[in-house]
Image (cartoon, rainbow over all chains, first blue to last red; front, side, top):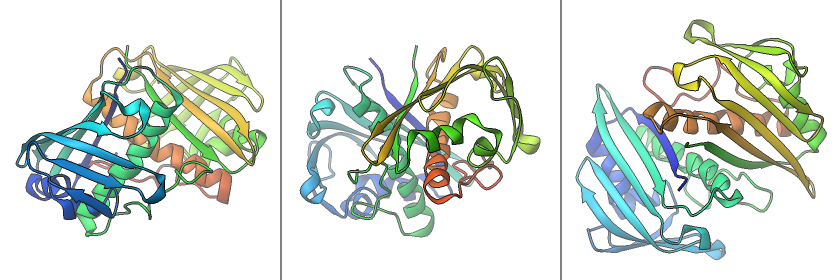
Length: 148
Length: 148
């Protein structure tokens, strides 16, 4: 099965990077300003994108400063059965972030789109952690004519 | 084998998008300012990234306003045997760009990195075509501490 795999580095500690992935305030700072729910293991985080839709993630793993893994409970049809994970590793003054969105059934155009759009949001994580300001929805960079 | 797959839309005609992919001036406007060689089928395009390295691509296909396909002749070790392709399709006022970097032997960290970095350069294509100004090397967005 095809996977979406990304890697980037942020000039910050793993603890600072982890905060962006494992707290509602952090997540609201880079993915969507309307983020609700619980980031604890077993909890459900709701990511609301206005009238464009909603993604619910069940938190499967949350190892401080190391790893976050979510299971998609609700979202785009093509996301059914997929998981989204982040692994953190310190490297000098930087934290390496490995991102994996796994379990896609096929390499559809939707998967191509999500690969690019994830990059937009991962760069938003980098900006948030390094500068304090990300570009979460509805201030995200659009890569389609329909505003996605 | 894992592939890097991206999709984005540019507000421009397929002809304008194609120019960014199939002319030295276009390529120099989004990937690296130091782009040399021949973009004709059978030709070799040299993409020079200062002291950071050089990528040579043999042009396998160049179908005006529709498709470009390159074979990697020289570049990072992990790129050996891979191809890079762009497919264009008009959709109203936009052109859909499907990108594929195929033939990777394994989903290495280098592949993760290149997925994210390709997004940076694909957003540079979008900016170039829509505004006339991209962010080619050495003005590209860095996603690692070492300046990649």
